[in-house]
Length: 265
Image (cartoon, rainbow, N blue to C red; front, side, top):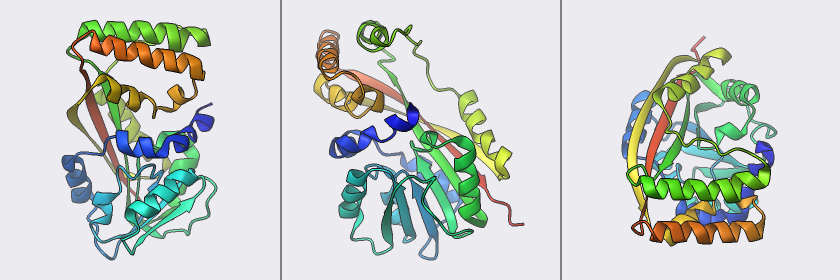
């Protein structure tokens, strides 16, 4: 199911690029402190999407090859980053695309690596990295309306009715992404031969009007997969709930960065 959902974003590529957030300067600082990049560096991005994580990497002067399943995403990013001579995009699944062994100094994936089967993804990253090369995996984990429990409860009731009930499922409890989860995710790399494993968490708050929050929901794969009529009614009710509880939706984001290195020998 997840593998099927992974391509739904491409149908809303422009809206995805507009609504999905980028990543914090502090995260890139931690990344570059771990793995400096310059014009001699070969870099591979797995799942470029709308290019939310691409520009700070390109600005190091590196040669960056991106991989994405989505034709619309690939076209969008070719236009977006076409002025950078070292930039290129390969269309297809990372699992299927042939890449040279020990070719890249740095491989990274932002909010995309979870779509790839664990063993396939880590083993292939290890294979394409040069000895001593680094892998970074990072993602954003939003927690809605942390300081407005009335809105949180109202949105939760709507999910129970429109999202979970049609699937015959009990609603999942809303929980914040934790440091334990980040540590466990980082440690996965050790199973595949990586060393110098590290992780770090970053935090921010984003604020949305009702209409903008509904636009953001329209870029989530599981929401795109909902019945169209049910989805439209759900979005209308969500907007009404936000407007009825102050007119603002705040998302409290936890961003996690996992870093690991391929041994020199």
